[in-house]
Image (tube, rainbow, N blue to C red; front, side):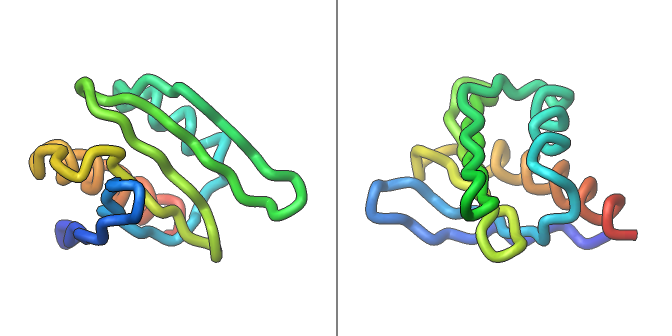
Amino acid sequence: MDKPVLKNDIMADGSRLFLQLPQTCPPSRLLWRIIRFGGLPTAFRPDLVTDETWMDFRYKGWKFSIHNPYGEYWFFAENSECPENILHCLAEYFARLSGQDSG
């Protein structure tokens, strides 16, 4: 599997959209995978009307959010200055899991 290419889309709030993956598992399973990876979940906000979810977590002292619009998971770093090596670590982990779920 090729390494995922990081996006560098800076949002109006200063966060960085760094990865988009197809949604291949439910948000509740993704939450457990965040924990298993060593992340500390800080919020889980499902919307029962739109079927979208926001998940917030911390990893190595940095804050992240995941949102699932349009059948994809969008991964955000709250601080756009988050080190690239941390973003690559997260991207590779979640991309690998996404491939396992879809195959």
